[in-house]
Image 1 (tube, rainbow, N blue to C red):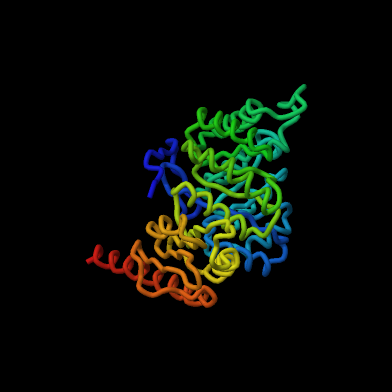
Image 2 (image 1 turned 60 degrees about the horizontal axis):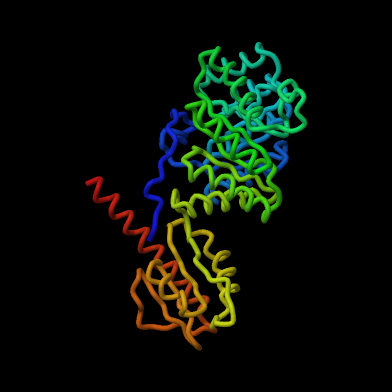
Length: 373
């Protein structure tokens, strides 16, 4: 199998969001953001727990007022995943969130206000030893930077980021990461490329306000994927107008497609044509839903005919090659004697995949146990 063996990450400093390392070749972490009303404490906690189960490693929560800050205090006590407080305009809310246990702050210094207010937030972050993310967004670029320009440019976005970084440098604060987002994919890519050449802090990637599940996934995959391929990016968030669980799924698929990180089953399936011998689309759709609980990395190929089926099956953990009435079954590159009836394969195939996942899981446990002896 071909892997991105020459993949080289941009060098960056190391910071921590809670117990999650960011930068300096740490695994690229996946973030998401709650879509619930923060004041609805129960719903917000449940969504955070669901995001963690889906694989999110950091969750961001919007705190627009002191009322949400009080809710955040309770939420933080009831979850065990790093939480970032998303703050705009009122520096006092950022300070309160830090006091209530936030593992990081996300601010846009440009809309926090004057130097004195920014200084108070930074001193608070220093006191609690938590990082800050400078979040520059093309949709809220400072008017003084836009000047006579009707639209943001990569250079203007970089200017905003560097101006904000100067505040932190003046305060001798380097526990921060930077994002420089835009909904326009090309604008975001070029802006991040400029940023990566001008700082050595960790970079958070995202295509902001990218759209619904389909269009947003495509835009994010292109933008984030291209930047990761170039070695840029230490943590990512896929922004979708959809259930945030989908953000986590898409993020892992982006990393998996580049062979950077792996989690769960990677389904390799044909788009189908008249050669197919069974209902590939339905089989894959059902298995994806049924097997969401499996986190062990596996390649499962489900090909409806023998044209490309054999080649994919030989490089998959489990592989199906479609044949008339029954299909050939492969496991770890070896063809098994048994064949699966095309009309009854779904449940048997699920069982085979689950058994293989358990075998891999137990082998990993054994290896870890032997290393600790």
